[in-house]
Image (tube, rainbow, N blue to C red; front, side, top):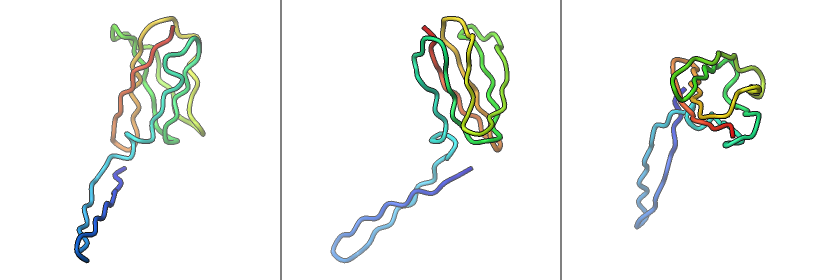
Length: 98
């Protein structure tokens, strides 16, 4: 999903318009609270998938995002990486469980 941000600047009655493409998926992914003591929520577009790996690269599991997101419970203390895939794009987010 690609979005378009538009910025405009006026100078001496001349408008200069700049358009910048941005990847919407990057702005739509939220992992919170981070760090957490027991549970992490991942908010992402519905239909996205989320793979979680430990900081050592060990695969933890895969979840489908439905509705508002997913809740990751029962993860031990440590650092993790969530790889969220949606519409051919992939975004990584790091999070910590204390």
